[in-house]
Image (tube, rainbow, N blue to C red; front, top):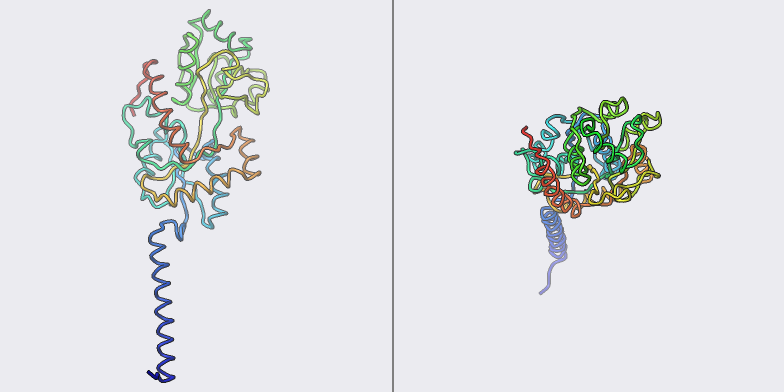
Length: 335
């Protein structure tokens, strides 16, 4: 059959148009099948349950800057302090699971709170999709300098010899429960004195108001330099950069206490896996940036290599551990 030249041109144009539509439709279907395609299209928000300027706040801001640079969208910080971080956690747990609202979740909110509070407005294991731990660090045991206690054995001996004088300070279950575990392992008695913040707690150690405290390394440095506070052990599996001459509790002869506090990034439950994986990859890349590592080093916060799967596993392992410690110590709190 002979087809006129004009008709052939029309058919060719029609075929090109149809082919283009097929390609467009296939791309549209691919985008609909991949929730991460085109994400992010708007700013991402990281919610923090504490005021600006604290360790968790700075940790989130340092990572947010790096992630923002790579994603090409602003990553903003929203501070929602109050109620032990519960307000922020509940806010994110109820957020639309689209990858635009994230939580900076600390140990206190995710693993210690379930051990001591009878009811929470969120479920650490069911309300979130873990992305990765941003920073993780051990606690240190700080004692009053005037007590002339230089080792863990000397602290234990002094506490047993002075049951009416021994006391310790904490600002939250994240510090109280590790101390109660230490008491259980060593057989000492010490009265708990609550404080609002680490700075206040360390001042109390320095002036002799309390005998000792488990505390994050950062707030102890100035007091140690003044000679009013002495650090005698760390709670991690290895020694810290800040106090390289200070032994771990295991090295000091006290086993079964390997405690490291963390701050991690999580999304609401139901956030598409493709978005979680993208965020996980961005956290991994950011954690290897030399300037980020140095910035956190100055805050006594080592970067962590624990990502989504390991993060979820850590939460599931630590909750029952601290619940048992709280039960033995008779600690139960209400909101």
